[in-house]
Every structure is written in C-alpha cells, then in structure tokens.
Amino acid sequence: MKKIFDVLILGAGASGLMCAATLRQNSSLRIGVIEGNATAGKKLEISGGGKCNITNITVTPEHFAAEPTFVSDVLERFGKEDLLNFLHVNAITLELRKGRYYFCRHSAKEITALLLRDAQGVDFYYGHQIESAAYESGYYRVTTDQGLFSTRHLVIATGGASYRQIGASDIGLRLAEGFQMRYTPFMPALVGLSLQKEQFWMKTLSGISCAVRIRVGNKTLEEEMLFTHRGISGPAVLSASLYWKKGEICINFLPHDALHVFLDSKKLLSTALPLSKRFMKAFLEHIGLEDKPCNRLSVSERSILKCLQSYCFAPAGNFGFSKAEVSRGGISLDELDAATLMSRRHPKLYCIGEVVDVTGELGGYNFQWAFSSAVVCARHIDAMSSVSYKKSKH
Image 1 (cartoon, one colour):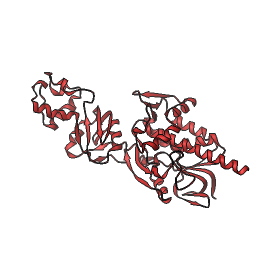
Image 2 (cartoon, rainbow, N blue to C red; image 1 turned 90 degrees about the vertical axis):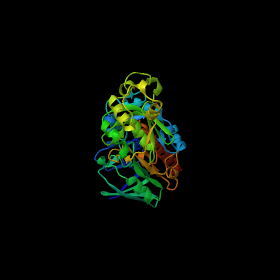
Image 3 (cartoon, rainbow, N blue to C red; image 1 turned 135 degrees about the vertical axis):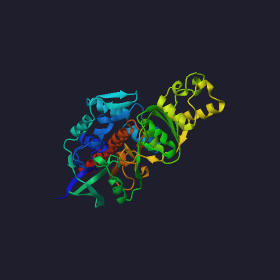
Image 4 (cartoon, rainbow, N blue to C red; image 1 turned 180 degrees about the vertical axis):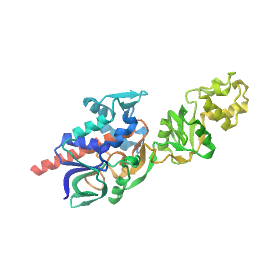
C-alpha cells in the first residue's frame, strides 16, 4: 500500500532530524522520514568520539568550500547563535575546546534524543533502502525496497558518501540525476593525505604531532598536524584536504617563531629548535644537513634550513572515503534557492545538509550547515503550507 504524506524527508541524519523536528514543532503536517539504518543520527552520535563537535565560536562563509553568498544567506536565517540558543533552551550542555570548538559535554546521543522528542508524531521508516524518486501529477513518488511513498513536499537529506560502514552512499546524487539536477560527484574530504616516495621520511615519525601552518592554494590553515604510518593527518591536514585537489601544499613547521632567533645557540639543531628531537633529526637527514651546533651553520646551510618554514611538496592522494569525515561535492548550489533550499526547477523539492555542494572545514562547520539548512528548509515548507491552507479555506 502506498503511504501518503505532506512532507517526506529522505534521511534521518543531522539535517533530516532537524528538519523533521522543526516542522513538527511548527505545523500539523503529516511528515514521514525514510532512513536506511535501523536507528536515527548514526553519524551524529559517533562524531567527535561520541561527543560531536556541533559548531564553532566563529562561523562565517570563509570556513566553507562553497559560494560564500549562498552560505551567508542560509547562516543569516539560522546561524551559530540560533543553534546554541536552541540547545541551551533544551538543556543540552556544551563545552568549548581550544577556545573555539563546541562539543557536547556528555554525549551526542542527547541531541538525537532531543530531535526525536521534538519529532514525536512523525512517522519514521527505518531499514528502508531508497531506490528512486519521480514527480507525477502533483506528487513526488519515492520507491524503496519495502514499498512506495507519495508526498507533496520532498526533502533530500541523504548525506554524503563518507562513513560507508554506517550506510552512507551517493543515493542523493542519483536522485538528483533523476530530476536532471546538476551535481559534483562526491570526493573524500577532511581526510588524511598520502605521500610521494620523496616524503616517506614522514612515515618514520608516526605518532608525533606538531603545530603547523599549511598553505594550499590561497587558503592558509593553522592547527595540529599528525604524522601517521600512512602519511599526514591531524586537524590542520584534514581542513587542508578540503581545498587540495592536486599540486603542492606548503607547511610551516615553526608557525609562531622566527627561525633566526635560535641560530646563535651553541646547542645542536635537533635540540635548539622548539620541535620534537625525533622530527628534527629526520627532517635534517631529509634535507641533507648535519645535526651540528646552530652557531656553526654556514650561510648556505642557514638558507637550506629556511625550508623548515616553507616545506612544499605534492601529496600523492588521500586516505579515501573509509577515513574521510565528510564528502566534498554534491548537488550544485545553482540548482537551489538559498532563501529556501528549494529546487529552482522542481517546486516543493528541497535539498539540505551534506548532499548539497557545501563543505566546511574541520571544527563543527558541517553540523552547523546541516542544522542551518534544515531549519531554513522547514520554515519555508511550513510557510508554504500555511498559505495553501488559508487559500483552501477561502
């Protein structure tokens, strides 16, 4: 039997749950949610070690790989302060880490529970695999492996392709293709970078981290970098991976110091500089410098050492979707109205969250985008439905 709704949301992740909860609190529409997993909020609950980096102290379009005006339009309608207030009013306690990252103090499961509570009365269909969607005679028809659904408003909130171990896929892009909407294929983002043979010396430093400044294209990022047996990772590299496609990146291993202030010391290079001795020995061997007292360096050796603050190389690739925090790519912003998240060519069809071609840096930006886009979408559906209801009464 076909199930009929006013609003059907595809996906019960962060954006889908927020959309359902917002709609349920503000309208009496019949709402359904289709989710491939057995429960809601899978990615939300495992992110950040189970405490989920929900947003950031500074949320601006500059922290997103996307058209800035579009992102700004959405954030102006539901931004960081709106999200923090929503969580505060609902007694979700957050903690600020490193002076900028908001995490759940107790558990990300509290947010899932809150959204499910607000969505009481919404019909959830778990364990349903979406196969296709089409528009017929004023309704969107969605086919799943367990039956047909029909709805006036359809919201694609299917997420990206990272975290495939919890059911992530590119179904949202396949649905978009069926509606002839343009999109960019998903690629791994917020992911570690693998190395060319010339940089294999870094693999010997597995487990060591250091504060760095990374430049990729015209973007500069500053955070911790972690050396691993596969390549390089850590917050600075994960954010850099969002902007890197091919070509060189440049790393400053001494982002907060002037190199020359250490070079009058009688100490060995490996101990005089404020970096791990193990790192310095490997780096010096790589660039062909002897580990000698700093004050015995020749002019040419001092010049070679400057690459410590501008070490440029081309990564070989990235660690892939299995290690990626999010997906870069998605449904083109040209297809959507920033004020509503509705399709420009298909009325009452909406796209929100990670399935849209908006990807944030590491630091809570992607959850902020998921919640912001969901609320903007839900408010427009509610407003449209209210207008339709008033017209029908007259």
